[in-house]
Amino acid sequence: MFATFPSFIRVPLALLALTLNILLHVTCIFVFTLFKLVLPIRSIRHACSRVLVAIAESWIGVNNLLFELFTRIRWQVEGLEGLRRDGSYLVLCNHQSWVDIPVLQKIFNRRIPFLRFFLKQQLIWVPLLGPAWWALDFPFMKRYSRQTLLRHPELQGKDREATRRACEKFRHMPVSVMNFAEGTRFTQAKHDAQSSPFRHLLRPKAGGVAFVLDAMGEALHAILDVTIVYPEGPCTLMDLIAGRVHDIRVHVRERPIDAGLIGSYDEDTAFRGRVKAWMNTLWRDKDAQAARMQLTVDTTNAGD
Image (cartoon, rainbow, N blue to C red; front, side, top):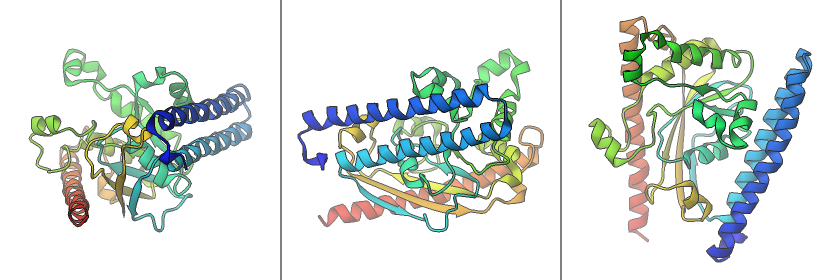
């Protein structure tokens, strides 16, 4: 509808609509969060939690509608068959752009339990969004660098404890926990600095995945292995809003959780090696999948 408007009209309209959507839904989230905090009755608190998730899914649904109205994106999504709203998933995805988040929200909204991301502690201070993420039980993590741990060895293991506390509340409810195992967005400079053995991916970090599996254990139904490709190259959220992203391809593969992947990552050297080997195998498969998706794009474009 609005995708044909000139950009100097379309972009401000899109930004205004997205902002109003944030204000509307975040206000509702704050109201029900207040009820949840001041009313100590467990049944009421659980009811408020369900309402908060419904509001968040509505927020995402309106965002999806706005992107359909203001952009012209060719979507190719594979592997959504058989997903369950009453299951619990660990979602693993390559990380190329902040666009990854609205992409994941679009394809999974109301198909699986509400998707929650591990967020850096600093993001809680983002106006409106930070408190909303907190109210929706997004786990906030404080990561310590290797240099910090060397100076303060007493902080060793705090990341794992924080992960366990964040996941504990999800053990008795359907949930989807998102993890970008690369830990940062892909750039060629980062790829070269890591000497990554993968063509399209950075090296995965197994620790965060192992901590979630250990904390959630049998509460998780399966792993969703997600690969995202942007055929036109790196993009930003503003590129998405401005309609400069025209092609997005996503592949989803459901993987079982092997009991051998659950254990003490910090304390068991042999287990740590097994998890790292499993992650590297998964990432080789993902790299090959990304290459196939890109090859399809290149072949398609060559025939245009």
